[in-house]
Amino acid sequence: MSFAEKGLERNSGALPAMSIVLMILIGFAFAKLAAILGLIALTYGFYFLIVFPLLQGLLGGAGVVIGVRVGRCRNATAAGLIGLLCGLWAYAGMYWFHHLWQLYRDAQYNGENLSWVFSTAFQWEQFKGFMALVAQEGYTIKKAHVTGLGFWIIGGIELVMAGGVGFLLPWASAKEPYCEGCRKWYTNKAVGYGALEQMGTAQLLIHNRSWAELGALCSGPENKGPAIFLTLKRCPQCASAGYLTMSARSVDKRKKQSVAQIVKEFRLSPEEVNTLLAGIAAGGQGVEKR
Ligand SMILES: [Zn+2]
Image 1 (cartoon, rainbow, N blue to C red):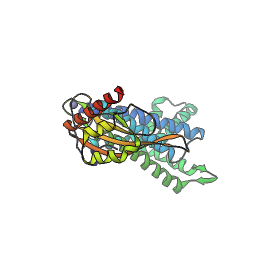
Image 2 (image 1 turned 30 degrees about the vertical axis):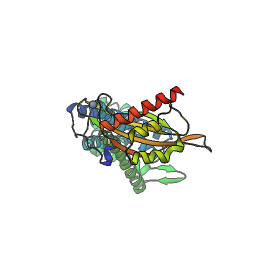
Image 3 (image 1 turned 120 degrees about the horizontal axis):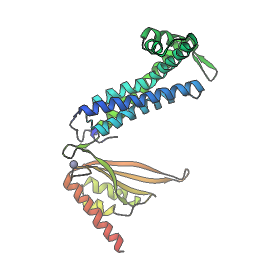
Image 4 (image 1 turned 135 degrees about the horizontal axis):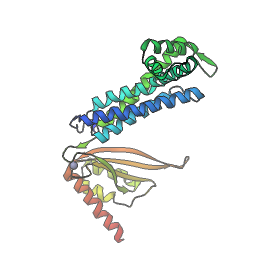
């Protein structure tokens, strides 16, 4: 979850031309890959309803996210819309490639050449006809044979899901905080660790905005066990404002797994960031001396 989403800070909404090019190129390349993977899964019978479309939307969206980050797109609407198209294509492209493959096979039987294959593949009427056949044939899930209307309903739901995931990822990514001065995305770094038993005190210190004391409380060495840990998201280059996240990590004894949970998220001014970091550094020295 981005901090900007919570209305703590808005980024500029800038949309560099290069970011549009990158989002489209990388997004559609990933979406094509997702579509072809889907087709392979469909052909070999390991396609899972709902799960696969989500993965396809995820892959398409991830491609657009790369374009957002590298091209520095701070415009969530534009990133989301390109992501939506890539998500839809990642799913629907599966059938289009299926159609293309079918045409290729037909061409081999009928002695047609590749230009016939491509010109036919781009004809909407042809694709509609192909989809009608696919729907008629349907597929079988757990002994239930899904055809016709059922096929279209499930397909429609899957299409919306792939598009939705494709939209959300880049949309959230473009909303992430960005330093306009340094032209850099904020980075997230773990800065301090404290004893989990001190959570009450830590909450109180945050409530009072006592950053030096919070720093001292969370100046322990890095550890993977139960702990309070602080992460700070800020510009990697300048003394920018920062977003502080305090999380609690406990260990699930049954699963023997550590579980981290976000307790609080806070926006800190540059001065507050410095106070916190100084508090952590000073406390850390104290620990080492002992
Ligand atoms: Zn900066």
